[in-house]
Length: 455
Image (cartoon, rainbow, N blue to C red; front, side, top):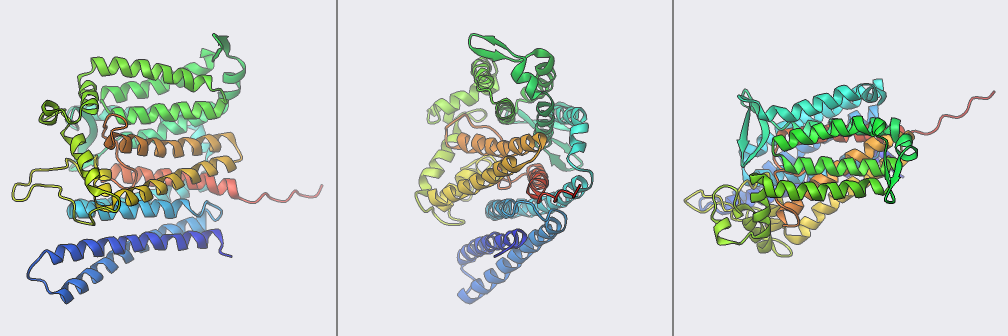
């Protein structure tokens, strides 16, 4: 019978094999397209490079595994392997799109694993209580970070939204840090006030209205975060925050009326914003009429990106066209057929090359990751840890829903990155920090109870 840590180590093998097989397929296809390369040279070169990349990836994962083994011996054995599988898919797909971006992604992965280890070491020594003690400071930092993209000199507008800051050639998306900070604040605040929110509320038209003395501070902090996100027009992250807020409120209180009121308010707000904010209105029109000739040919704010992503997914069929087979740019012109394939529409590239079967496998991996996060919440022994694990798992679920729903035309398309898969340094780094937090909670939840001392 394998121990938990040995199961975790064994689970890293499929991730390394995915990297090896993925790079081998890309290299073979690329060299087969070169008329000067012989078959033997092609196979030898492809196998050597792919084995090298697979070994490097496995080495990084094993190093992180050793940190978990020594610091968190009781942590969930499946969370890290699932994250490794997602990261392996991301590295291969980004390399297929742009090798330069893939090297940058790999460098950010190393930074993410370093912060992952730092998170584990810090919280293992000081405990999760330090996050509760500094919840207002953490919330303030999270809100301040969302405003940075609007500051002149370091922020810039891209496709109608202010997403990232640029300092010294390094780009960072502050909302990735903000999502963790706001979840920590909400989990801590709801832990202290959930009983009052349930028992001290007033009944109005059959719904429980919580007392503003307890509900007010949480609404102020959450409202400030939402207002700053709307200021930067980063609507995908706003939707993600809103969903996490309602989920935590429901889990903490058990009152269905709270998320019901929230959904009604969201519907009203969405109707108002869609009709009065030009950037959002353009996204809604593109979502409603993606194949309209006028919108399709509109260079900025049109439906070209959404329509092309739908065409790409339809072209993939059940089993896909194969690695390096989708046409992303027009030959000899360089005109993008699928805009921003490494980030916003990477799911469309995956469906095109791996088909519906590959996309389903990817979504099932995300589903398993979220399920293990919720299992961690179910096992947690204190309210803060339970709410923190729920919030972190739900943020990942909402982020996947927002980007996949946008690319498949379930909801309007937004600029949220696909966790650990899409290109983006800040996303990769902060999702490894999120993983570290989940593993710390899991280790505390799975520790065996100490035997009672004889009286």
